[in-house]
Amino acid sequence: MSRIYAITATAISTLSILFGCSGKSNHELALQLLQQADTAVATANYNYALEILDTLKAKYPEEIDIQRTAINIRPRAIEGISIRQIEQTDSLQALYSHHTDSLMAYFTTHHNKELGHDYDYYIIKQLDNSDIFGKTGIQGRVSPSGEFSIISSLTAKPVRHTQISISAPNGQTVESAKITYDGERNYRSSGTETITFIAAECDTIGSYLSSAPDSQLKLSFIGDKTYTMPLSKIERRSVELAWQLAYCINKKNKLAQQRQLYERQLALARDQIARTTSD
Figure (cartoon, rainbow, N blue to C red):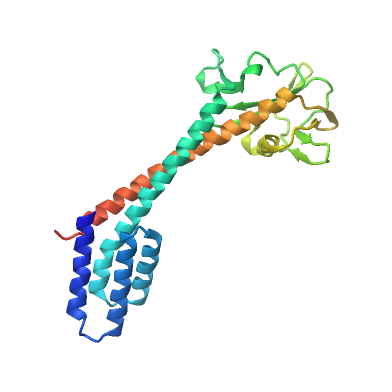
């Protein structure tokens, strides 16, 4: 990179000598901006360098030689920004990988041989051998790809429920979305009402349980009527840990996608540097 800086500095110096006596104030102002941008890149102030280059391009488009020199400075600034973004992304990925690994210690993978791996999900170890169907309660799950879900099951009292809610002693209540009966995600069989809520429909419940104080919470099944019962500690643990795990997995996945974008951005910047640097 030092060779590129030297080439750019030489180009700026040459421009200064060639036009130093021209008396053109616009040229002098443009040259000053060019020098400021070059210095900003050299001192790793990359965003400021881009701001200066934008000003230079907007105010002095007629200064062709200066604009040509600026063409090499811009990708150098983008290169620096890209490297910094990749470093920050790597740090965050390491953080969320650590959180994911820590949370996975509480989970086991549930696999159904008849359904295959496409239907695998993570569930806390205490509930791995506890089939929620035919019981009353809720259960948090996470797919290997990071999809959070809550399964609700009601046998205690038929209410034809379409949603669930969690309420605290202070009156605060969070609800899921309403899932109308369709015989699939909301189905009823042998006196049991069961709903599968996907992340977008129950994320508020997972988020709330992950941060709510440890108090006596109530679980309600809401439909034609409402059935309310205490939310057990194990069910709360199931949902809050599942939500936290899904959150960390999704963060990791998004950061991986961002890193790929930054890598492409870096490659383009370096290609432009190579094309705009004189031998």
